[in-house]
Length: 459
Image 1 (cartoon, rainbow, N blue to C red):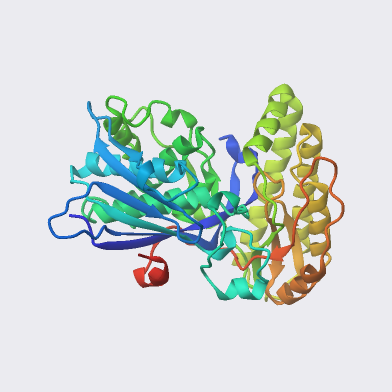
Image 2: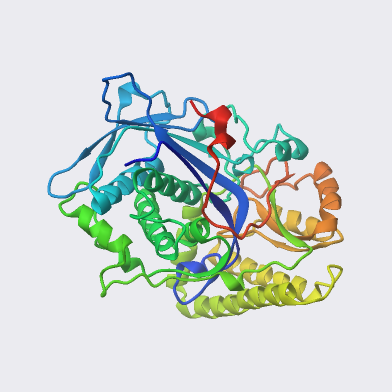
């Protein structure tokens, strides 16, 4: 029997080291969860006595006209639950939301495959912590004060800050739907096995929504929190197929439950090696621009394919630097040195990684660390107490990541209040107002939330 009301959240992420390398199982990525979260609340859809609906309404009330209504049906030949957007009833001007639609279809299919439960109508509300999107008209103090704000724009016009919103959305959405329809005896998402099933299902849904099998580090962080991550073999998802195809339900269940001995999930998630020493924090600095990650990745991978010897040597050197970064952070976190300790070795390691990234950027002719970002990083690193910084993940014009001593935050904020970006190179975006986001590292992954947290956003 479905629960009347559930709420969960999943964290954003920052891939501090391992951009591009994490796509290959031969390498790893150092990913930290962030305390900016995507929240999903599910409740039974209220109806009048005697009225039976087969409808699921999804709302994202922080954006203009962000509502999607879905009908759903069980397909023939165990093809799973197919969801269809009810165009005439939706107020959304954004047409399809592929991440919501795919996550919903995959989650409902898994629910019926596991339990045979009858799917009831529900109302689903998605709320994002403020710092997932740029809002240059608000100052840093105001944005820190409000956990959720109305962005006053359609979702298609919002600038993402690069915190991993799609992975956090798919993970929290999937978890909320599963928790609503299945009891803990059927699936306990807070047990080791349940968390693994959620990971597998969210990875499958996220890849299907993207139209490609990515590395999955962002979903792993959304489920498990901060970790050193080695990706799963892409072949694991080769035979899942599409919703509605014959036997899709059984194939999805087999993949999620990891029941095929010849096709086992092989990702590695090492939470013990992702540490931040006391007195230090990861901060994100938004440049109000954002990158198209897919285009950057395609170009880098094309360069690697054309220059395998040169690329493999550079990647091996980068992997060594990334491992040294994780080891130094862990060593400092385990040490007994007081918070005033020096971070010279850590700073040098970060600078080495940046130098190697710029080398790859030049060789692949891809703006992984564009000049305007280099200038911003260099300016921030001159502030006393800023240990180092990188353009995380795939790079480009997303928010930069900084390792900052706790007592240096006010000085960094002062710099950014008056910081003006240099002239962009031809063809490059112009970065907007530079703003320190109100986020820091968070080691916890998916968690349950109190529904009252979203009272003003739920209909």
